[in-house]
Length: 285
Image (tube, rainbow, N blue to C red):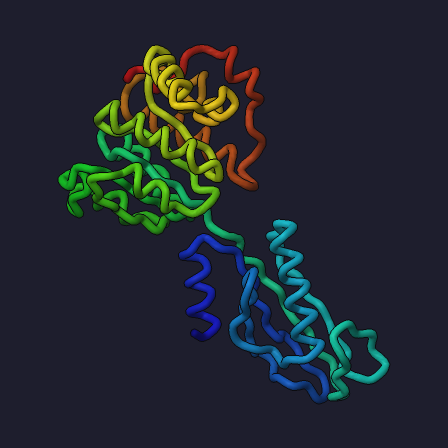
């Protein structure tokens, strides 16, 4: 796999990467300007010259990923016997400048149930850079013509037809954000159960009224989940101050609430503020 395929593979898999490019060379160096290498958390693809130069760049790239740095940076290496090194000496005699460009992992969002609200939510989120799963047990909801306005957006949209949606939920990558809004309350409950079993998902939202959520809480507690675990599910979904029951209104509210919680999208409202606000638009199922 070359560096370009590797970068696409990592982005598709929801994994971070750093693209390292030799941006300048003075004197003798192991690689020419333009040489590229992709650094992932556990592997690298391509080469910018090997030795201390490459090993140090790998260390710096992985530190950037670990710290969530999004801004590109440049670093310069002197290739002589007097230069301080950590991974052996390179005595080519020149100087090399390397540009490091972070490609942080795209968020993964899964919408379970592509009915009226799920469709509108998918249409909004598809305009954002993310991996977007549209999951439904009803094949007709995922018809290509019906989803044309969703799949034409910026997101990598992946329709999934499965008779067992809660099983597919178990295959989502860690940190994925989940919206549960199927046509069947029994299916919704199984999805909530599967989400709590995971323990490593991002935000989990359930569409529904407070009465529905009270019944679900009681059933989840009877299944052995602790109160703190059950509290990981947000119900109703969306911003409490956005009122209205139209599918598009609920979708806008839910999308705005999610985007506020994603990196660089701004701070989240506190839990106490959300609890004391008026009922949200999604409290209708």
